[in-house]
Amino acid sequence: MAGRIPEKIIDEVSRKTDILDVVGSYVNLSRKGDRWWGLCPFHNEKTPSFSVSPDKNIFYCFGCHKGGGSYQFLMEMESLNFPEAVRRLAEKAGVDIQDDDGGEGYRDNRRALEDLYKRVSKTFRWLFVNNKNAVHARDYLNKRGISEETAEYYQIGWAPRDGEWLYNFLLKKKYSSEFLAESGLFSPKSPRWSYFVDRLMFPVMPDSERVVAFSGRALNGKEPKYINSPETVLYKKSRQLYGLGQARKKIRENKHVVICEGNLDVLSCMQADSGNIVAPLGTAFTQDQAGLIKRQADSITLLFDGDDAGRKATVKAAILAESVGLTVKTVKIPRGTDPSDILCSQGPETLKKLIERPINIFDYLLDLLISAKTDNTGEAQEEALKELTPYLDAVGSDVRREKYLRQLADEVNADPVTVIREYRNNRGKELLRTSRLLSYRSTDLETETVFNPVGDELYLMTAVAVKTEHFTTLRRSLAPEIFRDRRALSVYRVMDELSVDGRELSTEVIVSKLDDEKLKSYILEKAVAGIYDQRADGTIKEKIRILQIRTLNEERQELQKLMDKGNDTGVDAVNPMINNARMKRIVEIDNEIQAR
Ligand SMILES: [Zn+2]
Image 1 (cartoon, rainbow, N blue to C red):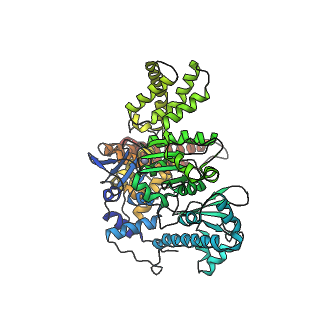
Image 2 (tube, rainbow, N blue to C red):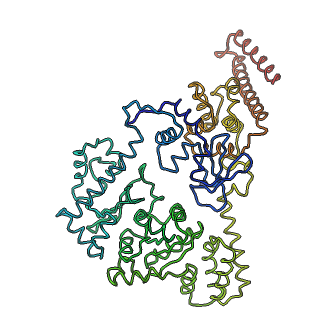
Image 3 (tube, rainbow, N blue to C red):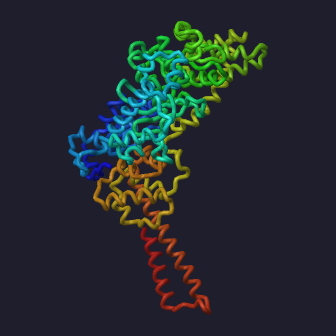
């Protein structure tokens, strides 16, 4: 494996890196006071809760609580590991990193993994085309109406029936078994056994060059029908879409995305001449994926299966897509079918026409609800409204929402004014729920949201982790043994270790050394919010004093207990000299407490 990067280099790179530069190349930031704000790149939002404090070299999101320094930002953003992030920034900062393992380092680990996936993808492809045992794979695709051109475009492959074949093949190509064990291509339980056995293979390609994962479909009717690669440094499931690499060009041209349920549907739609088609990978459509689409397109067509699951998925996806500001349309697929079925039974022209004539999502939602309720009673109206509420909440424009409400009123033969009022009542509840989730918006940042109540120890250590210049005094005044709050103690230990090593004490570094995610967020939130900037000095001194007195009192109580025991007659009786010494110490303690 790669050599470790010396800590003084890590500190030097960090010192020479401006976090505003690093974050600024991904997020549009604007300045308010000494902080900068922008839309969080890690969760979807319409008003900025993501902020950067350049003086403290940290970022923090008040919405999703992600935070840290430049390294953490790059790691999250680019799915890098720590050494890779350091190397990336070292290059920019012009700091030379000497590898003590002869030059091949972490930087190459990621590239090596990319090369491996590409090679494996090519191998699966070759087997699919040429191997006599892959007949059933070729037949299957053929039966589904997928042409050889489409299969080539998506690099469809076949993973052999012999589960050890791939391992032996790669070993011959001089890959080490350690590297293969971490590649995500083999079973974690038996490292020679391929993750994919006798499956139709769909390489996941974020662009036209790279393969970052695979999705494999069973060919023999076995379950599960689809399995996907485990997450690796290259691959985060909720942030990828199947078909995106192949669709990118078309999406850039028309700023529109069509999303369907399965990989095979993607191929079918491509064959029907819809070039901007993608699918979520074995999960429901996620908020991250909606955000990913929003970065490249303005509108989306939902093309989910014509069954109850597909309908539910459509409603959910519509809310997610709407909430990131995408214009949403949908295609009504005949009951019991999917795009792949339509291609097979009715041909590409029919599928193409269907995709090209989507309906407005609100019409679709209304239709679903109205058709479910044949009686036009007040109850049905109320029910319809309740179910539509989350979608209406997600609509970004008041004008459009009002239009929808009028449409709804019309549809259920109700008075529009009543419907609008009814909606507002329901929406109030919905909003309450949301504001509880996003409590940072409604509560003062000073009120404790993560730890409640916060004791003296945690307050003190959080404040000192932000105002690190107080640590020397703190260390002189309080020993680690006096801490009872394990979180406070962990901050103490980290700071102690850093100063023993002669490293720079900064909030960024301290936080990067902590394991407790909540504690990290808590400290970063305080730091970025500037809670301790003004009046913390006095409070820190006061907390130190409180804890010193607490410690002295505890010692005094302990001595008193021993003395009481010592005054007993009988077997426990002690030398009066010892009790005198105890008495003397108690007087000392009383004086010390007085003096503070
Ligand atoms: Zn966030």
